[in-house]
Length: 191
Image (cartoon, rainbow, N blue to C red; front, side):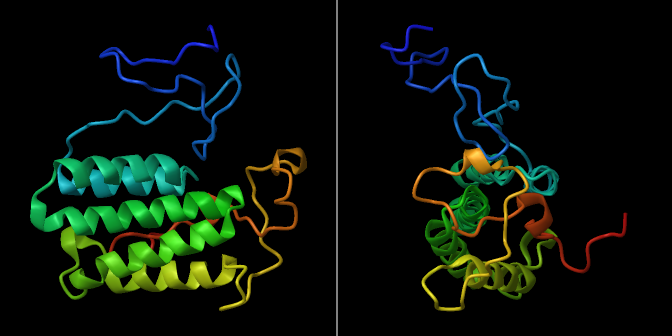
C-alpha cells in the first residue's frame, strides 16, 4: 500500500483500509486485525438488536455501534433518535474501553438522554430503563471529572501496558465485554 495515497472503497469513496482491533482502532498495514463490520446492512429491528448484543458480548462495542448506525440511517424517521442513542451508548463504551474516559462518559450520557423518550415503550424488547441505568452508572464510574468519581480499579482487558497512548497512563479503562449491557428486558440468561 502506498501510504501517500488515500484508501478507497469499491465505489471510490475514501475509506481507511488499515486493519482494526476489536475496539475499532486502526492497526499498522499488514497487521492481523478483526473483521470489520459491514456497513449499510439493512436488518430488521430484531436482527439489529440480536447482532448488536452478540458484538457487545464479544467485547466489540465499536462494531455494535456500526450495527445501530445502520438501523439509524435506514430505519423510519420516528425511530432515528432511538437507534442514534443506542449507537452513542455503544461508542461511549468503546471510548471508555480505549481509555478515553471523559469522551466515553459523555457519549454514554448523551445516548441515555436520547433514548429517554422511549421509556415505557421498550422498543423491540429492549429494556430502556435498565439500559439508561447501565449507561449512567458506567459513565459515573469512568468519568474522571469527579462528578461521580472514577473507579481507579478499571483496567482494559484488551490493552497491553504498551498500548496505552502517551499522556493517557493512569486513565481508567475497562473490559468492554465484561461491561457490556444486556439490551433486552429482564435478566441476562445464565450461561
